[in-house]
Image (cartoon, rainbow, N blue to C red; front, side, top):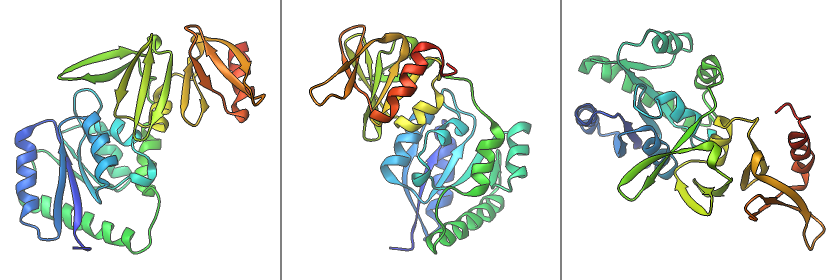
Length: 260
């Protein structure tokens, strides 16, 4: 089934997901590889399944559809069809970039028309197209920079809580997850370093290594290690790796000369 189009659904309404799944399942070219009910689940789903096509609800609690895309690595980005209730801002943005969208409530004919265009786009990319769709890239640019995040959603067993970012000591990469180090406790979050870095306040947080972001307020000293390189020592005594190429940026940020 090399030609099958692997498709993922994201919508916070179970009834809406069931309806779209029913429309997709009658298409022999489409395989539904997963569903997500919120933005955090959507990011994890895209990185885990690498779908060809993503039907993405725009308006969801927590992360909205635009924030989901901001957290997906460009190389993992599928073809996207947006699904939205009437939202004048979103519709204007989609139309400006000639992006496909489904306006709720939509009928079967509109769904099939949009799906056929999306399938053609997937086939075109398989024929040699690479990288982030310029139209999608244009949309993300058009939306502009978002406000730095103040809290990060953390799942702990069956509970969900929101971790204030100012309490985080440092952040460690763990494949398609990150580890939040908070006062001796570690929380695992379905997020990538690149996506998280883009949403953190650069006046407070700095990427100091490919696997580490530090809270600048927690940095106590720089100390040479046995290889005569430097490590970061935090206020709680934890040690964080420092890339040689990031030392100057760190020193500038800590001295107030880095624009932070």
